[in-house]
Length: 223
Ligand code: AMP
Image (cartoon, rainbow, N blue to C red; front, side, top):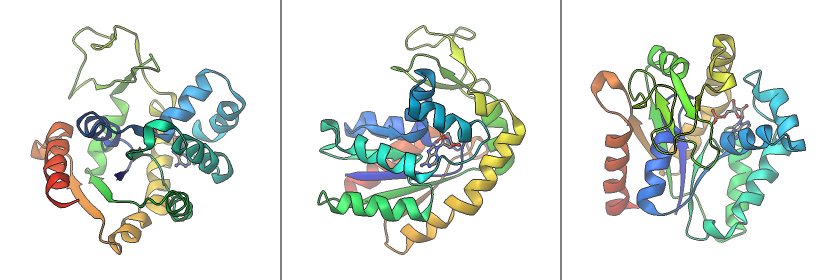
């Protein structure tokens, strides 16, 4: 099963994708995480991607698309995957369709997560991530703080703030890009009847756990 998580940065795509991945036993593929790993390891791809990421811009397709195609070749994707952060443009969605068709697969479900904009900004500024690339657990200083200040509950590594999360102008740039380039994907997938909308917000007390468990129910019944 191929599931795509849509939603602006800070809506909780990564959290929901991680929970679905655990429950469904298929990998979460986060393009942002793959880029960050490459940046940390100072690979050629990482150095190139960082030129765009640090400014809150999308990494060009000639870097992103082959990277995803390569990831889809790996053995753990045989039964499906949860895409978190890809596709991000109509062009990428079309290329993704082609990649899947060549493997006899298709997009089965697209989840569109929505959160009020002011809550998103607050959430991004208070987000902390585990510095251990094998763990990558995500926390929020207000909604989901670690038990011990600055330390990951799961693996004990240091928690850090993503470079692009600390700069408010880069955050706004990313949200602007989302509105212009990524939100048209909602209509793209709506037309194919694979889109499911989910509101995720602390104001209605509906966070990642609840959204993920509702989605699992839905998947069992309908997909
Ligand atoms: P994320 O972790 O999904 O918030 O992504 C962080 C950053 O990685 C984005 O702001 C982009 O610079 C880059 N990125 C991630 N996924 C893509 C993609 N599908 N296309 C282009 N750039 C991406």
